[in-house]
Image (cartoon, rainbow, N blue to C red; front, side):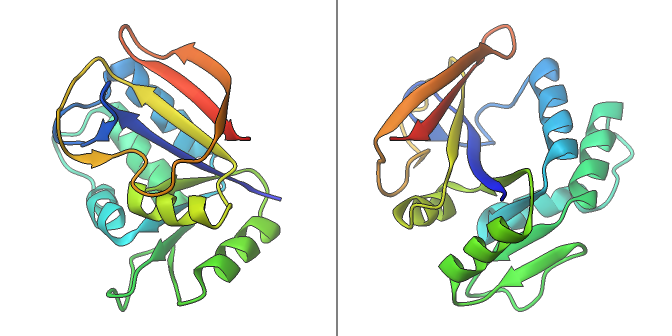
Length: 176
């Protein structure tokens, strides 16, 4: 059975915003390896539309960016949306029965499936479907934005912490 993991870069004050801070080279390489190893990704519409950036190579990309794009394109993606009518390559649109669809995906797969997007993660948290939370804590204070926990705030237990870059720590939690 697959495990659902919600992980995102987060500011010290609890916000996620890819336009305000980005991973350094070491952390980005970690994300490349993670994308290669994942059994797939579940996206909310907003994050999926942002991630579609990786569908087409750009001439200015580094070797690591090209590696991430290849890994991202290769993995299956499930997109949760009430407004999209179609999705790109290697992606499946999830219909109205979110809980049933995610339970089926977990039962059919092995390995780790990424959950992308705080709104979707909030819904899946409420349904009790997320198995692990990974916070990549950056030394940035934003003061506003989208919180990492956009919905329910589950009781969690810290199971690991690891320096990821010169100034980023990964905190890994599981539901209690």
